[in-house]
Picture 1 (cartoon, rainbow, N blue to C red):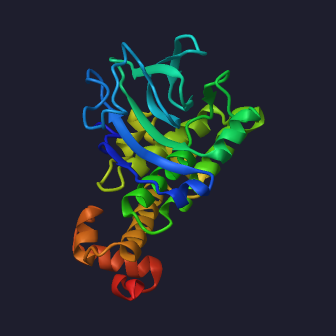
Picture 2 (picture 1 turned 180 degrees about the vertical axis):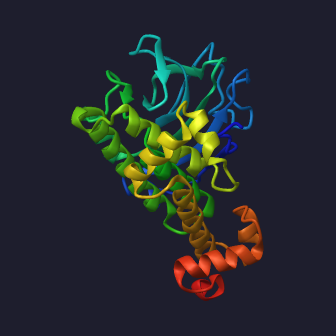
Length: 293
C-alpha cells in the first residue's frame, strides 16, 4: 500500500492594501505529492508559478518549501546543484533565478508557502534568512506538516483577517526553521525520525483507514518494534494516535463547516455513522450535535 498520496491541494490568495500594511502577506500555500515517474510540476498552477525545471524561474516573492518524502535536486544563482532529501527546507528569494525537481525514481512530497512584506525584508536584511544558505536541515517533523496543513485550511476558508492569521503561521514557521536548523542539539535520533515519519503518514491519510502494520513495513521496521517505540515516543499506540487525529479533525469539521454529521463520518472514513456517534460521545463526553451547538 502506498502512503502520503493525499492529493494536490493549494490555494492562491488575493491581497488588499490593508493586508500589505500588516508587514507580511501570503500569496499562495499548498501541498503536492509527486509520485515516481511523474511529470513535474503540475500544470494546474497559474502561469506565474509554473516553470520548466530545465530552464528554471524567477519569483517576485519569498517561498519556504518543506520536503516530507522522497528526494530531488535544487539549484539557484547562489547555490550550486545540490541533492535534496526528506526533512529539508528550501528557501526561495524574490528576483533570484532557481530551479528544483524531484527525482524521477522516488518523487517527493512538497509543502510550500509564498509570501512577501516589510517584516520579511527586514529578516533577510539582517540575515536571519539568507540566499547564502538556502537549504536547511530541520528533520522529518509532523510539526512542520501541521503548520502547512493549518495554513492551507485557513487560506481555503477565506474568512476575514485570514491574511493576518496566515502571517502568524509564516512567522511561526520561520522561527521553527531557524531554531531547528541552527540548534544541533535538537536533532532527533534515527528512531525519533521514524516516529515523526509515521505521524506524517497518519496526518496525510486522515481521510481514510490505514494499516498500522503496513506503516511499519513502509518504514522498514518490524511491527512489534514500531508499536513499542511509537507508544514510548507519543504516549499512544499507533492506532490510538490515528484515532486522536481523526477526532481532532472531526471537531474541526463540526466547528468550521456546514457538513452534516453523516457527511463528516463518511469523509473521515469511519466504518459506520453509528460507530462515529458512539466513538465521539465516548471520547468527548457529548454527541457531535451537542458539540456543534
